[in-house]
Image (tube, rainbow, N blue to C red):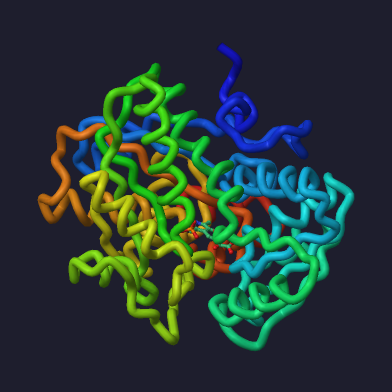
Amino acid sequence: TAPPSVWKYKDLLPVAIEPVSIREGGTPLYKCDRLAEKIGVKELYVKHEGMNPTGSFKDRGMTVGVSKAIELGMKTVACASTGNTSAALAIYGAKAGIPSVVLLPAGKVALGKIGQALMHGAKVIMIKGNFDDALALVRELCEQEPIYLLNSVNPYRLEGQKTIAFEIVDQLGFKVPDRVVLPVGNAGNITAINKGFKEFVTLGITDKRPKMTGIQTEGACPIVKAYKAGADNITPEKNPETIATAIRIGDPVNARKALIAIKESGGMAESVTDDELVQAQKDLAQLEGIGVEPASATSVAGLKKLVDAGLISKDETVVCVTTGHLLKDPEEVISVCAEPVTVEANLEALRKAVFE
Ligand SMILES: Cc1ncc(COP(=O)(O)O)c(/C=C/C(=O)C(=O)O)c1O
């Protein structure tokens, strides 16, 4: 009966100590009737993970991952990141009182995320390469040094993120949606959420699981290509490119697990263009008052594309997960919105601007 939050489900989480927690989880599940009408589905909900403490779902993985680091007596934590993982690691490291090291792809990280990692005191290192290069490097470092790696190769990250599934069931009054649609980058989240729904079935709390539907952008979609080819692993993309820098990933580390999650749940994978995701970002913000960063909007853009293609039935109850807050990437927002009007400071000029 307690309100949803990550540690509401502590009995299903592998941490014995008092957790390192800053009130993560318990994010809103908004019923989006205007958006549902525009897309053409009967029932659409948006699980807005941008309402976590650092503004992304990564807080769920880090509250468990950093708690585990403390439980294991680790002295330093590290990750590679397209930005949100580093912001979350920095804040939870600060909360836990241990140093964090974060590796970011130079020149390709949204401003808000860099600001968070810096202000929360992480050692922020820009790698002259992309996220995949940074991940390979940090894995090598953590194999050689007593530094605890907290990318989503670390299973404790996924344990925290599976609570998204628990909360969705909780918030729908113990109903399970027909489908969950979410953005996919390194593919930890789709794996984690699928696991959460499976655990509730195993525990007899629910009796069905949603179709897990992963969305990527056309410039970075190794998992979509593998899914469409019926393959059980990906061919890494050397130069992923997309406005959605959070998922600008060519060699997702959880690809095999994600393809299994999609297949065993009867889900699918699809890609969208940057233009389609920007339109969805505006629709979320202007039709429903939900402010998201670009990568998050791929879930709604992908849903629209699949409904238009007749691949998703209009009768489905769908949950789209929006994974990060609008404030993370203000530069992208300014770049895709019309210029504000600037007027002389007098009433005549104002009236002209308001009513013209
Ligand atoms: C807003 C947002 N939406 C979707 C994803 C994709 O989740 P995964 O498929 O579990 O990777 C990310 C991932 C970010 C990082 O990988 C990182 O921060 O290093 C994100 O920040």
